[in-house]
Length: 91
Image (cartoon, rainbow, N blue to C red; front, top):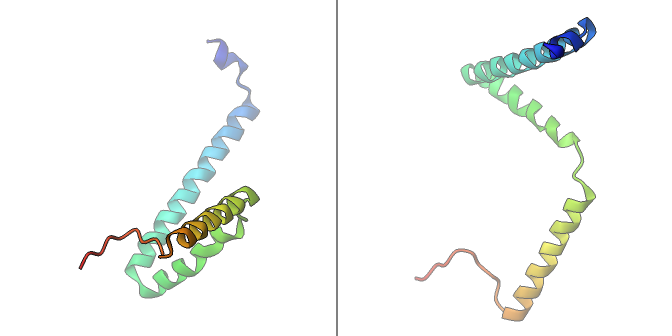
């Protein structure tokens, strides 16, 4: 019972509004997907809005990791003399 005594009206309102906003956003996204499946214009609109995710930058650490992987791949190709191929096509 001590937990309920420590909850204030401001805390309750904050968490209630946060959860409500999350549900509204999820409902809007679901409606957008359903709408885009019904209409070809909706699909184009949905696909046009979706790349907004790319606004967020890629961290420098990840870029450095990718560069190191590329360098290692180039070294392996130079050592073998042939490009490495993950698919084994024996014909």
